[in-house]
Length: 266
View 1 (cartoon, one colour):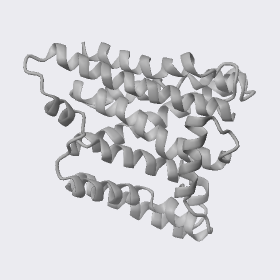
View 2 (view 1 turned 180 degrees about the vertical axis):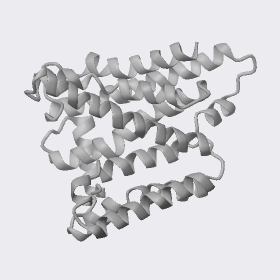
View 3 (view 1 turned 60 degrees about the vertical axis):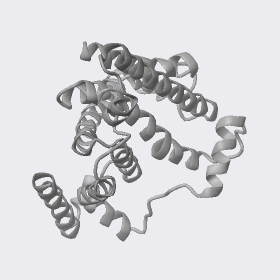
């Protein structure tokens, strides 16, 4: 029953992209498609939250709205410590890439208050010239994606399973529909598109295990959203650059060692 529940949630979330947006005929990086997808995943997330609440209401003999919010991670234990732990843990994991970007003069980009107003005009009033693509990608990667995906795959799914592997598999599978877009809009051959999707499956699976671990440890949706946004902001590490010089290798290994130590001792 729990597996069926999670499959239904995953299907609701992904299907909304195809019902409301138009991924088959439009590129995911066009302005109209970006807006349609954002609205689609927001509606999908609301549907998943409502579905989860209804399932809990009809299957629980003593339903409590407080207990539901607690199970979904909205009422975490040790809020400030959990946020500090998440920031420290992920900083250690990405310490090598952070040092690399700093020494190369690159900066992690975030959105400003003015860009937030522009984003609202774009999303709710269809003002497509209100915001640039670069800033729009930031909102997609640091706001809409982390919030909607973590609410569905962590808040709605994780409390219904004992482990974290099943949600990680579903999270990775839900990204495999990009195969269609790679072929239609990415102009990739079937073999290249499959290789790209399988690679994406592997790292999204590992990433989901990571975020689920933090969610379960502190029972906090805020930590998993923060972790998701941080990972998206830092991006996939450039291991070729990191292994090009000894100093980067030292920072990379030191960060990973601290990451492992924190995991094992906290």
